[in-house]
Image 1: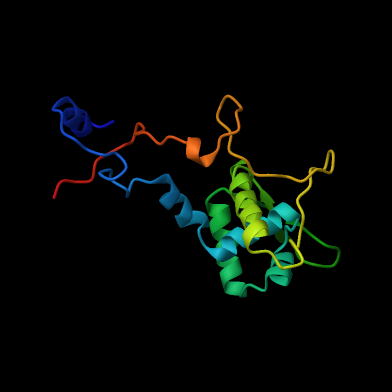
Image 2: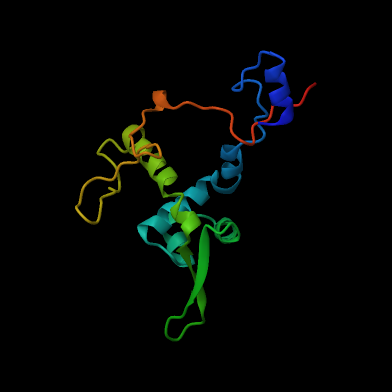
Length: 171
């Protein structure tokens, strides 16, 4: 909590951290600057499905080449994907895209979007792809859990000011 917020609290000033906070200091907004565009999420989906080559992404996504190249470059610059070189016999060397730890950490977010889409936006016949646990074949479900491992319902989540909490600048 910053000094201004602490001083207001000590002075007994009534403020609501949900409404009076500086919302420009937001991890969600910063994340969306990186992955909040349709093609970026779809590239990640395809990486999770096993695609790694530009031609594979282009074939399955139908994304314009210039946009695809820009999104892949950005994902590499952000450390979400890395490139490795591969060479097919008789061809020049080319990059393939591999997921990094940072990219793996996005799996729950992408799986959450997939789960929501399967529930509310799937084809009337059902989902196009199913996510199963390779080890036992059971359906994979994105869930919210606390650090202690408890399943947490959305209505049981409490948001409180964190170390970077700031009030909106005074007008």
